[in-house]
Image (spheres, rainbow, N blue to C red):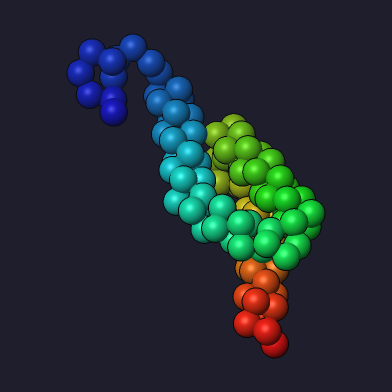
Length: 104
């Protein structure tokens, strides 16, 4: 990324901040399939809670990217906690939906 003529145009701190922003973006891309799938499944029987948890996850991911880019690894602790709790909540709601569809 920092090779050639473009590598000399920005100072190291800007390249480092860009690398952190890309890392946060790729982290969000890695989890988006899981989050969307769990939200859709949970929304079949619990549409409002699934939507609320989905929105909280969305905003926590934005906070994660901003905090990680600005403060580095220390800035991502709270958004990661919120995102993890939301994922567990979506998983629980999805399990509940599956159990209801099985007729139990």
